[in-house]
Image (cartoon, rainbow, N blue to C red):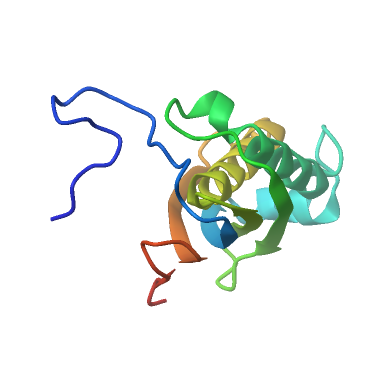
Length: 159
């Protein structure tokens, strides 16, 4: 098993020193979903919820969250993010909405946490905007899909 990089030899939390790492292009993709009643999904797709165009607001919230990840996750480095794309689509089985985030930077550390944060906040925003219609919604399966760049190598989840 790999050593946990955010703990020092005495087990204390630390921010990883990336000052000697080369600057490379880093990309991460994360995804998750929110399950809801068919009537709630219809409201989301029509943009007719009480709070307006829910999917557009959730996309913007996800983008903003990616940019603020280091304010939320204590050991994350503040990054100069080159690109954030958040996509929200109906799930293929009709059970709700799927959120996907793709984050890119050029730097000494990856953007996995930024992609995961973008997806999480996009889904939380959907919940917030649709909760008047359906308090029983479930957010699930937030996960890293792929990452590239960096010394730890590339990763791609078998889907």
